[in-house]
Image (cartoon, rainbow, N blue to C red; front, side):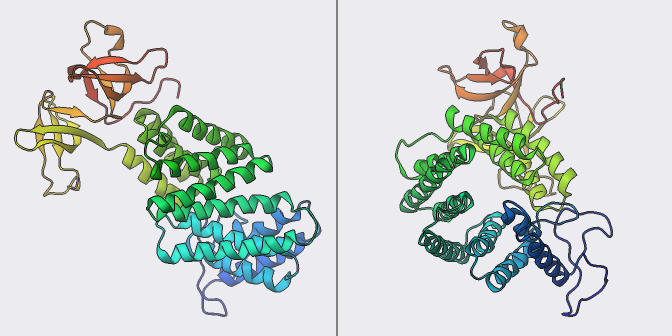
Length: 413
């Protein structure tokens, strides 16, 4: 794409914000990349069916590593894509709406925190895209499936920003947008995408309805797992969309107290993200953060005067005692305040990965890994769901469970 070093004519330096690695691969001037994208987009006009996917690709993915651009480079290219289509193809609304769609996609991907500025930008883009759709409807020809797909994507984006506002009324608005997204995906036969939109709908309902749908239910998680499997099959396990869906699934499993499964999945995703994108990529950072969150362990301690309090569990010492510290104290610093407690002084919180030991009445369970899900009628017992699905969940005494800080590899992995 670019053979020059140093500054370009506008004084801009070489940039690289994709998944290329090494000393020379992927470095390019923004101006050269824009020139390349314009040339490739024009080349594909009338040469592919459907041409729109080839037409938009140079603005989305690096031609060297074939992975998506990210960060400010993705934003700059999305802005120039809009300028390009509105100038070169003002009458071709299919191409014009793709420019706005790419900008919306970049905003939603790169901004994990929805600020008022982001919220306004998303809603302004959605309004422009809906206006274009209305003009296309008035042209007396059936809308292409791709335009319906974009419409569903717009509603999904509006649902995301509404849900981020945090009020019950905003959650109701988000639910309606997700419903529109689901219904549109169903209409054009996108079954898995419709299931994902329905899960988002359930999550929004949970935010505003008392006794609403359970986002930790087996059906909810099964839909999430099916979506992930679908993307592995359709796009491959290393595709960015697959990795992102996997990270969402790992978080959902963790929230549902299925930490062993969540940690195994997150560990695989960290490896894949680093191998495909490198350690500095947005997805790699997200995977690392997700795994770190899942690997945290917490216990409850009962104080004589103040009742139960939650603390962070750090590790077992050689004495068998557990080292704990306040949750907000950074681990590993010199002033970290920690102390040791004996096995009868704490309770692991629900969702904690454990390994059974010392079970004389059920020796087959010794060494078995599982998650704590519920407390038994006897406060000194927990209901454990085992990773080995051939073992039924059962009650285990607190003295027979030990927190797993590192989950060993499976024998078949």
